[in-house]
Image 1: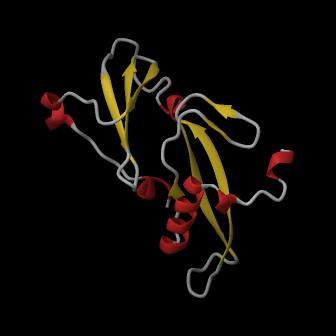
Image 2 (image 1 turned 45 degrees about the horizontal axis):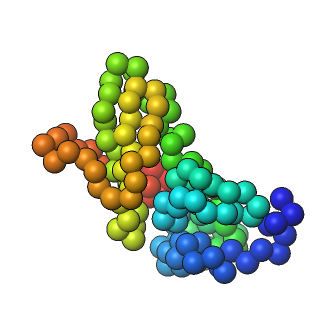
Length: 139
């Protein structure tokens, strides 16, 4: 993509926070969930995030240096496609970022729907809550 040539990833406020987190922790970091943003000549009208994964000069942890990173932009709705049988309806997924941002999605069968920014799950189902960390998944 010609828009990526000589692009300063640190110039974007969302990437800058993720880059700083990645440098500080030595592990992967994710931007906030963004809706309605342009990224190198492509407009994202659905919720998306950038996952930054560090690249090191060697595999062994002792003495290694971070020499770069790989960035993956993904759409959150795609995360919820085909994860439930068609007869399971009304599951609300709340994604919380390391900055405390919460974004809600409803999963009906094989499709996901963006609810918006905030935690919109029904509190009466709190006892069924399940959580996971991106660091546990990707690190």
